[in-house]
Length: 149
Image (tube, rainbow, N blue to C red; front, top):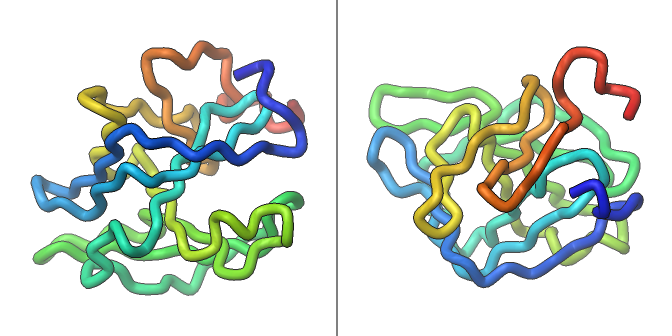
């Protein structure tokens, strides 16, 4: 991942990507898009068409990415459980990132995320949502003191 570019690069990924919450399947896709950015594990963006959106509520939170634009956050509600800011999207990303419009990424620190048969490890820290899989080698941005990388 240290050879990932800055600005980030988009990479279509046909591997099976699944997101679950307490055994409930939230997303299942073979059409995800990875965002590859220096110092971070990839984030996987899943198209709305492969997400069971009945569990999602738009949250009031937002943030801004210098590369992608304004992020929208999503709360997940499954049965009696509610997880604030479990996912995010770029509804109107900058032109270079239009490919991920209509896609969501989920925080593996809050949900069960899988790439193939491998359960994803979350990127360190609370802000970044990178998906650490066996082929990804750190160190990663996210630990204390790494924000300026």
